[in-house]
Length: 214
Image (cartoon, rainbow, N blue to C red; front, top):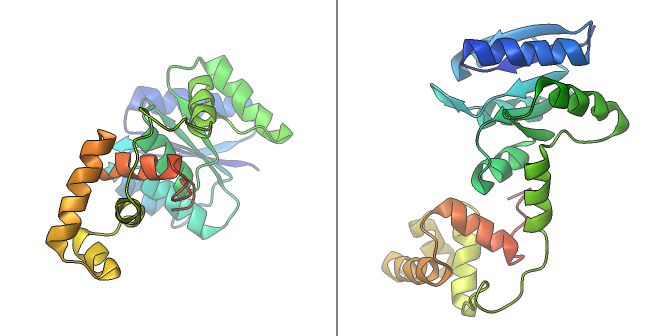
């Protein structure tokens, strides 16, 4: 019997997602969790084949559960179901091992069609998310939308985009933390960004890191 799992803290949404799974795979068994803690408890004794996972939960991010299921290597297909369409959420989920990313504004019939298409090798992606991924990997022209960075600034961007702290980046580059911090401020100003997540995305756009593995 196919085993399903729904991680969703809003009861109405959880019931709706469970109904989507049952409509997609009529004989599926579905277990539910409403928080990260609940999910960890359920997954200690239950190995789903397909999981619908919300990102915004009371005690953390559903991406942590995607990551857990990926590391278990049981073949579970984790699909993020969320209202968040921003790049930082999409790529965070995909890096964690999500096999799909669908927005909750899809109709039940649309979601059922997406899930049933998995058998044909089609990843479940909301159209807007698919367009976002295609746009992300399109080549970008140099110039106004791709401000030039010095070689040292590119080095700093590459390292911080991989998640390293300012002190660790300074250690890697044999610079002082103060100097690295100055580089980071300059990079943020040039690229018109204000967070590590945006820095990671910009580094990926420039080919400095792989957005799906870093």
